[in-house]
Structures are given as structure tokens and as C-alpha cells.
Image (spheres, rainbow, N blue to C red):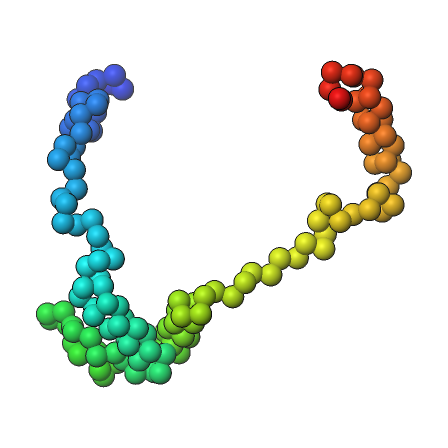
Length: 136
């Protein structure tokens, strides 16, 4: 029979304060961006692949062992649109986001507030004026 306080129920093989990887991550694996730039001619191959997909042509990229040729595959229209979007976003920057601030609290004049709200605001102002330590 096991209980919640049984030390054998602890699934962690390390003691508190002990690291499971004391030497840390290997030094050679830190710069993924540098690796990608080195292996893709400064990123040009990636851009060419996106342009190919945007044009509806499967890019000519090396295939993994055991996988079929990609040249015979068709590019889906959704993939074409995504490739175009990626090229535009990275080449020209994302389009600015439009925000609807017409209903912002700061834009509402007091004339549009109901009488009950105006009375409550007035009472709060009067209470603040009565407390000299709060209002300078």
C-alpha cells in the first residue's frame, strides 16, 4: 500500500537543488539563426523556396532519405497564399493595425452620461474635497 507521503512516489530522480543537466546546453547548438544562414546561402535558398511556392511550383529542395520526390507534388492554393503573405510581411513589413478608438472612454463627453452617473461623480468629487490629505 502506498501513501501520498511515501518517498518512493517522487517521480523526479534529482534531489531538490540538484540540476539534471549540470554542464548545460552544448556550446555549438546556441545559434540556430547562424546555422540557417550558413546552410541556405545567407537565407537566399529560403526566399527562393517561398517564391517558388507562391508561384505554384514545388521548390527544388533536398529531400530526406526514404521520402519521395517533391517535384511531383502540387502546391495547394492555401500554401501559395501563405508564402505570398510571408514574403510581403518580411519584405515590406506588416501592414499597420487599425484600431477603433471611437468608443474610448476619454472621447465621451459628460453630456452623454446619464443623470445618475453625473450625480455619482459629483458626490465623489465632493467627498474628495472634504479630505484635504487626498487632494492637494
